Image (tube, rainbow, N blue to C red; front, side):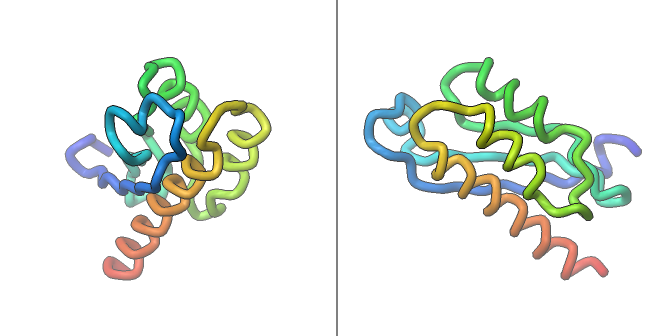
Length: 108
């Protein structure tokens, strides 16, 4: 697999007032770079203001096989993330996953 063969699926959701990311971006964005041959996430990104939080998401999701759904890494995120906008962030993750499902349904 080369990175030329990967796809990117993104999801967005509204952020609550009080988050720095809302002032900068207006919404929370989460992106998954996926190897469509293996259905594994090879990279993840977000519109968190800090690199640490983006790295946190990347560490949880990278290597996850999307054939298993998204609940396990979301559960891991929810147990370990304590900050504003948790529901909005999870919503953006689910939206990115739904984009992946749309891609898969079009490329069967």
